Amino acid sequence: MVEIHVDVRGETCPVPLVEMRKAVRKAEQGDIIEITGDNPASKKEIPMAADALSLKVVSIDENEKVWKIKILK
Image 1 (cartoon, one colour):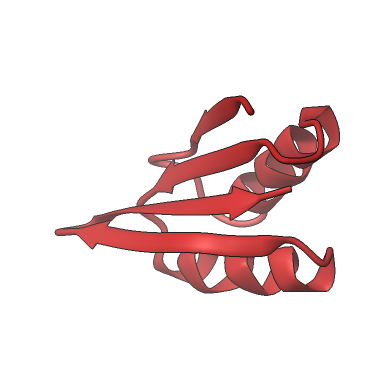
Image 2 (image 1 turned 120 degrees about the vertical axis):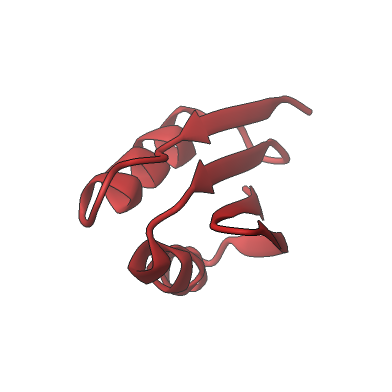
């Protein structure tokens, strides 16, 4: 299992979603993709996109304005 880190802090939609999808395409089955960002809309959209792609959202952590979403492929 590999952890892939995607940092999209300072980016607005649709960039975080596009970067998440790129990471998912590169990832192998069983890899964890961790997306770090600060855009509130993306925090809602990324888990919805993961669900649509039949991926499991492992965790959503938020610390002040920065959030981290972990997705299992």
